[in-house]
Length: 112
Length: 113
Image (cartoon, rainbow over all chains, first blue to last red; front, side, top):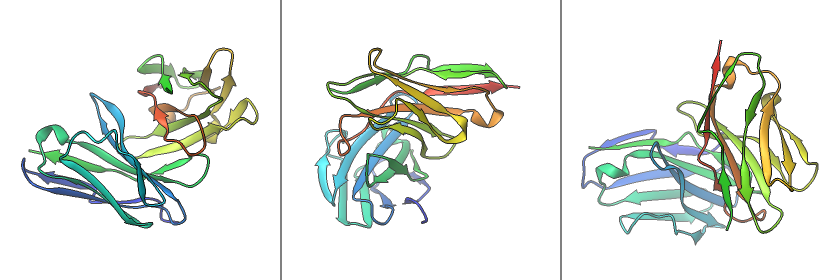
């Protein structure tokens, strides 16, 4: 299996622009998680889905952030409009049983 | 509510020395416990997990952790540190097999030659 796939790996954009991060979970996994990692705040859970349904989005910072999972093999995290404080590494992870999560390589976002 | 504390944001050990990374959790029910490792510029990778079976759990790369209910601890150990063990280590807890996982703040391990 190819593991969790994230794209792009790096994104540099200007403040105010829309950013879309993409994730393909491992086939057969029924839960998907979006995390944000920064030096200041560590690893934060933004939102997670179970069977494509959002279960907990309490970690989503504000209305500028939105996430979708239209099917079992694809999810997006969108930031509109982006701000410099959104600069971070965003991870996607998927799991099947016992909460053993498999993480993708991350997307490093820089908002200028 | 579940929570995880990791004592020491940074730990340094000499190559060949014992590695001990501390983790304490709070949980109202017997938890699922995990240790993850993150190498530079990579995602997190599962080292080991406790799911109410044996209290001493063996993981990859020679690491192991012991679940101690009376101390609400799940410390990670390795008898002999290797240079390749230098990374960030995260302890995590979940109350069930289907709830979200709560990660600790992480401990950065440095290995001195």
